[in-house]
Amino acid sequence: MKLDKDSFLTRLGKLFEANKTTGTVWLTFKRLTYAKKKETINPPADVLEDPEIEFPCIIRATNGKIKISTLVMAGDLDKFHDALTNLCKVHMDALKKKERVKKPKKTKAKPEAVAKS
Image (cartoon, rainbow, N blue to C red):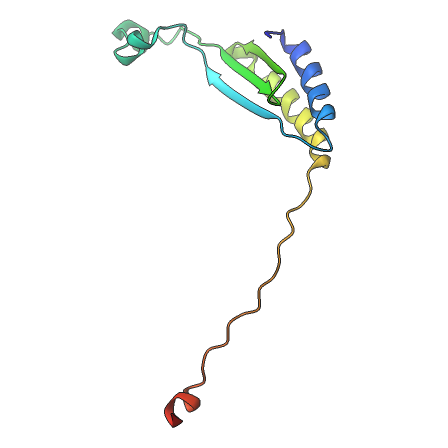
């Protein structure tokens, strides 16, 4: 479902809370071009050369069941990214550190033992 920026951040916070103990939340960022696939293969030269054209960024979040998205214009992206970063930092406490088992180092054969054989 497409939301405005503030509603997206609110719903994303709720999505993080719902998946705090178990589950995953995926975030994707893409530049939106409004072009068909056939047109994107060979874009018109005026589109590539015109620096005034601003393409929005579409941001999607899902947990596999619930999908939310929003459009952010290029000029608003810095403020939105700061708010999103703060939201992610707040909800990173649910992550647990990966437990790694230390393996004993292999010992090399001593040169004296090899020479006697």
